[in-house]
Image 1 (cartoon, one colour):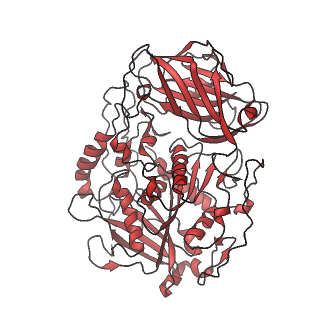
Image 2: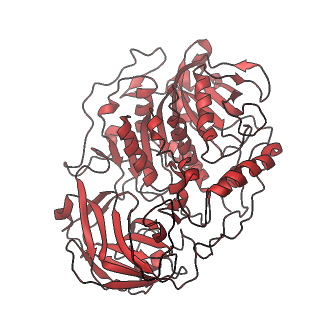
Image 3: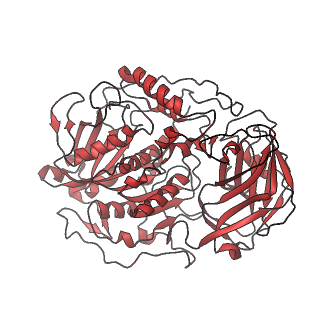
Length: 628
């Protein structure tokens, strides 16, 4: 396979860091006073309470020569002892750590830390095809996959990573990296969401606060202490590297003051399943937890066979249940949203609304949980795909406030920033919050004619009856949406919009259906019509969702469908914030197997959709009057 998706952010980050990023004051002003919020007028923060050579301007820590002098930077590596033994050798695992800190720390200056941890630093599997085959009948035992042989081990790596260093060391922060258990030069077994992935960064934070021991070698007794650290830590990273700050924060570890997760996977079930349905991440058909395990296995070859036996095969292989897709205790243990009660770190969350790899619900649902905790939260969303950090100024304000303790008024900044359609990614529009507080639910109902294009409106028309779709996974969703007529999908669309319509939040569908077989896939797309003539192939997709009709009653238990007997499903689509242009139509498309995401059963399953019991509820800014 090509380079793993979660590594793609690295090249993007390098390009982004070379740009002159906008200050918050320079970001786009919102059009529409009812939805926008502007930063309260607060006096510029000063560096009066910080020791030299810190300089604070506009609430941000500035690059200064004493910090930026690379010839004076201090680099060191060590192994931090954890509180777990995940490789079954009777000894506590040690994780590999490196440090880059500014020169003044040699003379007694204590600095806070920006910390990134990852399973990717030592490389990934490369082009080996270890994905699950997706051509199978639903409910059948999945065909076998090729197991990974592991990444080539390099015991001589002296440096873990240089990510984050250029941004933060010149501003007076140390930068710390660590390798996840079972990867690189860290001990332990990979678990992909297991407890050791949360406790490993916790141990590093404990070491930075003097509560855990660090050693100069992987098996020696000479200790290293972080006497140069204030104990205040901020974590950041993208994708898997953005997931691990959340994982660490769920432990409630003291000293983790702030996190900036970018496109984090906050629930492995939501990453690999949807409402009981086996679903792949976008672009990686057939990936699952055990596949990801194989991709990142770069640790000591001496422990790999035992880790494979006791973790990959005995725990992950038995827990993922690709036959039913049901939720179970294995998935619950890998759901950070369910563990969010322990999070105390101030969170600046970043995600994209067109991220079909780690979908936006991961961040939106986590933010809902954090708000319930009373944790300080700010959100940044853009219209692109996977990855994409907030503007550097926004991140700087966050870390300056919570790591340096500067009262820069970030609490009074807008709670949400959304990059509008066509705007540069680093020029977001501020809003009072996300979802937009002015949005309210509007329910739309279909009118028969969906094999062509039926109507979709706010008034329910009775006696619409039954319409059918015949599954054929060889036809992709984009082709179905573009087709004037197709027996493979139902499509219902509003009248052309007379003014732009702003959707902000989570849509929800209600569908009553029956099937001629005991199992079926169900896929729902919200699209704009006519399909855009320019842009990428997904340009007409507003949002999407998937569900298993066998789990209509209980996501933990599949109940085979009785042919001809209807079931009713209600489920959420992926969150979105999008302005649909005047002249466009909003379309609801219902079909069965999704070529790019679901399993691929043989064609021929027939779904009968009861239009009188089918609807979609959308979050519309301005409510029903705005949609009319």
